[in-house]
Image 1 (cartoon, rainbow, N blue to C red):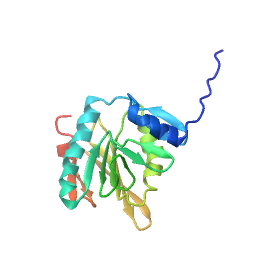
Image 2 (tube, rainbow, N blue to C red):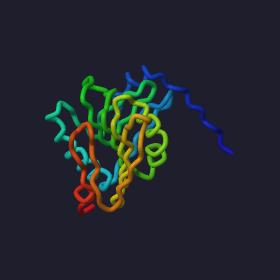
Image 3 (cartoon, rainbow, N blue to C red):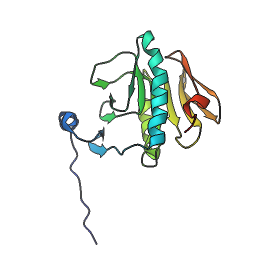
Length: 177
């Protein structure tokens, strides 16, 4: 029987110091550093299409980011697939209005459970979108006065993005994937 390796927790300060020199993108969750896996072609293309559409919100003073921009949620640091932010500092974001995750086998449970709970705790967040890469299916969590309301689209449909003043057409996002 093999021995269990116990990893020493890493402080947030240690993580932040080491992140700029890291050769691999890593997320930080309350003392644990997680290496990020590479994305499939479908994942990458789908996230890219959402990002391209969110770029249209830049004339409203917002900025769209894809993949490499860190989101700071206190003792949690994530790299969402796509995010739209309307104010923040240049290296890490704290106040997104839209967050998007494209599901993959290795991150599915994290995106559906852990990240959903973390993201919906962000005061500025208006919409959290979760996209299936294999077929046109999107789940959105919209901020309402009582918290968040879940909406789903499958096959075709239009996803309204409130803080961006734009919409996402599933037929366009998933075309030729």
